[in-house]
Image (cartoon, rainbow, N blue to C red; front, side, top):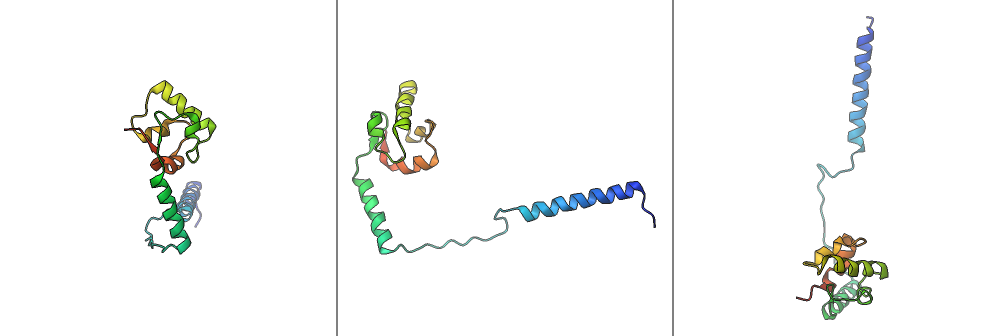
Length: 126
């Protein structure tokens, strides 16, 4: 049986589509169809002590009022250096006081990670 040019072309196109489809499914890294079981790890004595000490320090520490703090005071926050502290002060001068603490993420250089680190250390002074 002799194949025509059209039949050969259709077979080639089908082969390419099949290869792309197989490659797509082999290359996926998502968790679709997988069951993830998370277990809670019991902290070691040292980890528990470190955690409780950090929580006590956080609870006992006076929060920084982001609406009135100077750039120097803002640098006491983790992840906030002189440049970002200056940006916070400039942001306040341009837009007024922060209405909610999450608004600080509007300042260039403060993303989710830094916000998570300072969230419990800042206040609006209310």
